[in-house]
Amino acid sequence: MPRLADEGLYIASESSCYRILREADEQHHRGRRRPSRPAGEPPRWCAKAPCEVWTWDSSWLPGPVKGLFFYRYLIVDLYSRQIVGWEVYERESADYAAEVVRRAVLAERCLDQPLVLPADNGSPMKGETWLETRYRLGISTSYSRPRTSNDNPYAEALFRTCKYRPDYPARGFARLDEARTWMQPFVHGYHHEHRHSGIRFVTPAQRHQGQDRTILVQRQTVYEQARERHPERWSGPIRNWQPITEVWLNPSAEVINTPVRDSQIR
Image (tube, rainbow, N blue to C red; front, top):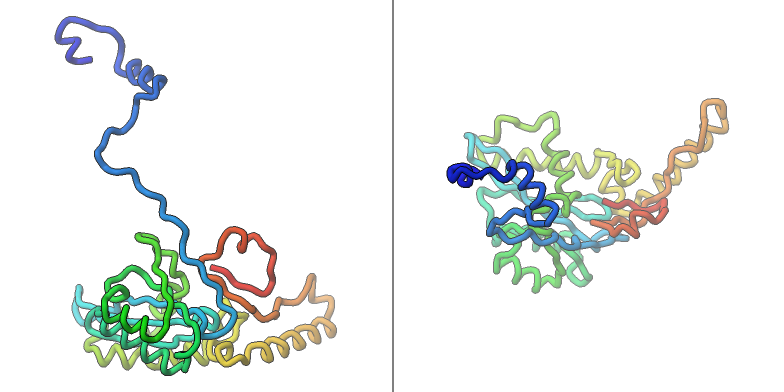
């Protein structure tokens, strides 16, 4: 329109021209960027017992100065939430990742059984050493979708639990051995003291060892007896203490919408 005005012509306002273009479906962005592709379906797994599905990730631990980090590797059992493998190193490496997985498989004595280990798209999880170790140990794997942070929620939740411990050193660890020393009591306390809300408030160690059913039956009895003694203090049923028999990683909409009392999904 300004060019026409320089020639002494006025046809319509700019807004009128844009309106006509929209009505003719001609008002589109004309960039050269390729249209984004859909993220696709996330990897889906279901665990009904320990050592069927593990979830794995690595994260930073603050170092002695800003910008310097240590790298924490964690492997969590999807069914029990127990940390089956962990280590802290000074850098990320496929060799370190393979070593952590190898130790975890030997410690859990699950070398001769099918095992799935979803992971993110980090370089340690795609290095040749890690891939070779995976094939040798008979581990199936899948990878999170690119730029999708919630495909591995259980490991991310555990990192958050670790970070919000009261004794977490917000100013960082001075040395690598200091970071490893701090992790040892955290893992022990998480296994044997932390009542996990996602598994009916039993500890990961109790569930990993199959003790949760007995504990939950006892809780059910305690609550039922309490309601019998003072029914006026109860306006509905007691808390659900039924054991969770299956845990889903990235369930489908069909699984989410199915009314099941004894499963947990995320």
